[in-house]
Amino acid sequence: MEKNIIVIGGDGFCGWPTSLHLSRGGYNVTIVDNLSRRRIDEELGAKSLTPIASMEDRLTAWKEVSGNTIRFENIDASQQFDALHALLEELKPEAVVHFGEQRAAPYSMRGLTEKRYTVDNNINATHNILAAIAALDLDTHVVHLGTMGVYGYDGDGLEIPEGYQKVMVAGDDNVIYQREILYPTNPGSVYHMTKSMDQLLFQFYAKNDQIRVTDLHQGIVWGTQTPETKLDDRLINRFDYDGDYGTVLNRFLVQAAVGHPLTVHGTGGQTRAFIHIRDTVRCIRLAIENPPAKGDRVVIRNQMTETHRVRDLAKLVASTNGAQVAMVDNPRKEAAENDLRVSNASFIALGLKPTTLEEGLLEETVEIAERYAERFDSATVAAASIWTKEQHAGVVTKEALI
Ligand code: NAD
Ligand code: USQ
Image 1: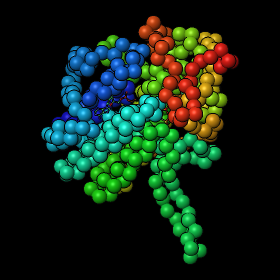
Image 2 (image 1 turned 180 degrees about the horizontal axis):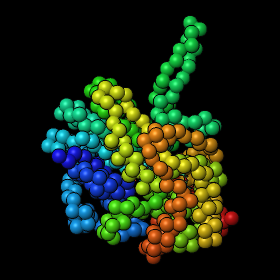
Image 3 (image 1 turned 45 degrees about the vertical axis):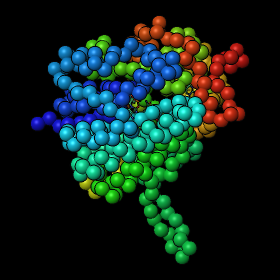
Image 4 (image 1 turned 135 degrees about the horizontal axis):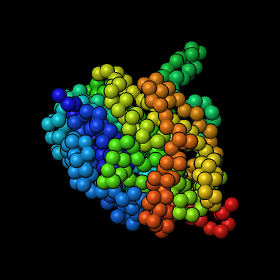
């Protein structure tokens, strides 16, 4: 019998290709999504560079192409507890993959409404899933998409471990005590703060109710298509490039394709972790297939494959077609320069073969950024959400161009 998997947030950038990958891999997939991401696009006057189909058309196309049915339930995981509980009771899934959160740091810092929405939505969704599984006494494995950002970005070169840090503490009795603690969190936005808080919910429910949890601390995802989303135009994945939801490398790629200066925040000395969307979907399947045992502590895996400094990425992308680079005011409160070394040993040990920037960049430029360049809307590009009142939006001025 096929194993049931629920993908919460399965209409989103990571959730949609993951749902297809799991369906193709023989799982019986049910997507839960309240379509809030599509509504936020309307609110921001922004849209995906790629023309994404409605959920109905996506699922029809998938049935035609693969012969497989994916079920869809329009449920808000943070607000509709009874519906979520009933679905879990009906399906008794092998795993719940949880992508269903508001995931843009800039959106979470826009103002009071967005801060409160992000906290209410993200914390309630995570807690509802855990509380329902505990109440139903299910053996469901929860696979959550967390973020590298919970560790913070003030690193000095010490390698970031996978979730837990070994520490030695001198007690007042002069004995050296050894501990392994959850890596101290240091979030840089209200969004990243909710991911830090999610971690405590997982620790509690793993300890109290023996829920099996894997928390994937994912880096910035780039790229658009996976082998499954390429099978039909109606299956195409979303590609965000606006000032709130567009992530840095995808923004640079489309900016270069349309001749817009590449918007480097501050000095561009920020180093971040990256992963291609193709590797995201593979990692999630690997995580599902290598669950913790009942009673184990939360398994934390760093889901990233490379680290890069923002100004180096800008130079690399600009060099492909001679695009200009602009050093704009940094609208965020973050370290101007940081080093970053991260362990991703557990996915490599499970067999992940990373897609490198070198391999994927050209394909992404030609098949997505250049192909859909006519859909680009320059009005949505500026990073307008500022972290504190003293900061300025990341707009391109003549002085900013280098
Ligand atoms: P996304 O916004 O494209 O997708 C999230 C999906 O969840 C959307 O379809 C949205 O409608 C849905 N959703 C949100 N709140 C919901 C709720 N209460 N109930 C039901 N559905 C809800 O985001 P994404 O880029 O696919 O990211 C997915 C997850 O991965 C997020 O949790 C994010 O924190 C994490 N992540 C993303 C990246 C990245 O670079 N995109 C990097 C690291 C981690
Ligand atoms: N940046 C620029 N120019 C831009 C956009 C961003 O210089 O035009 C800089 C930002 O200031 C920041 C870095 O690039 O220093 C990364 O920004 P981002 O928007 O690509 O990524 P971030 O806000 O960290 O968030 C994204 C996803 C989030 C996920 C996170 C993983 O939106 O869901 O959790 O990446 S991580 O960064 O590893 O925490």
